[in-house]
Length: 471
Image 1: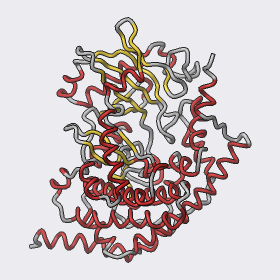
Image 2 (image 1 turned 180 degrees about the vertical axis):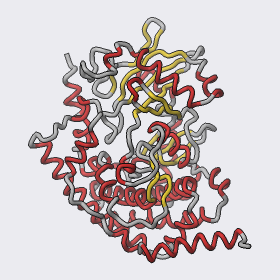
Image 3 (image 1 turned 90 degrees about the horizontal axis):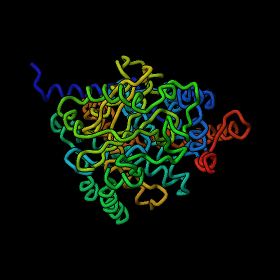
Image 4 (image 1 turned 90 degrees about the vertical axis):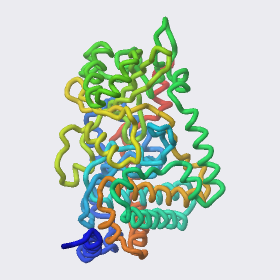
């Protein structure tokens, strides 16, 4: 009879065996890039709020890095033609370096973790690591730090992922479940003074990003009711004078925000369960507005609900449309029963701690939605201010977080550790991959720019669209 130690050795051996079928050097290849990036972006824009699609392209047009952030579908297509080790489990699906950040746990600790799961799905773990690695390379290049640092930060991220995967392979499932990467731990592990100061600044900044401090910035009180201020195109009322919805839109046809939010909120409460439902029963709805978020998400339906309790304390809940993951388009796995549930399930599996108000819903006309708190102590990195040593530290931290997320969600850290081994093969392969893919992204970006310049795609900036609303 095999002992637990025998079983763990056997699982590690499976990882080593996978190298024969898929050598680690195979990960240097970027896949089949004979596709039209403009066509893929058009496909990915279908179903979005039509008037906001030009804003999506405008934000992507800012740089090759913002283009990369907004084009997860292109890399998913390319990755689908690359080799993988055969170990598949829940992945983030859009694991670029700006989808890591700080947020408050239910116990009010400040955690550093992956914070965007719109594309989460079952897939090859390598896809997350490659999207992270390429994003580091592209960002470092874009900010003028040179190819040498780009190679170095990719290597640091992969080595960190490798080191921590080995550590997590020795942990029990329960130990992994309780593993939380807090800002206090970050401060102890980083090597540069600039990184330590940025972590301290981040803790202070997060403490100020609460619902209370957000209220006067986003809303005004009128006749005892708090109303969200319109600042189009970023924030507007669906049924208001500054709406960007067309007359034939089904949501606009409802005529009133209560008819829109009522069914969404009802289904959302069911997903939270009785305890959190009882808590939210103390709050009264005051207003709902549409909010444009991110780069790749621009044009997807996103509402912010402002509620207030009897003590005049606010709570903002964000409700965002969940559509088919780009990973699911290119990797064959069982289809989720509900796209909003897919996002919530993936987030709960992968994060060390999740928002207590994370839930899913179905809106009018069958759209699938998930809900979470808006900005509760949420912070993200300001890459433009990073020194070189800060980039090095940040790359290692992202590799650590991704290793923890994969180990917790997949339960296959032992196999992945066996596949990675202790050498430099995977890091060397992904340095080559990231260089080549960064070159490819720059080529795709130029095709995208050409499409915008020649009118194949319409791109508008935030300032340009805001000017439409100036009297």
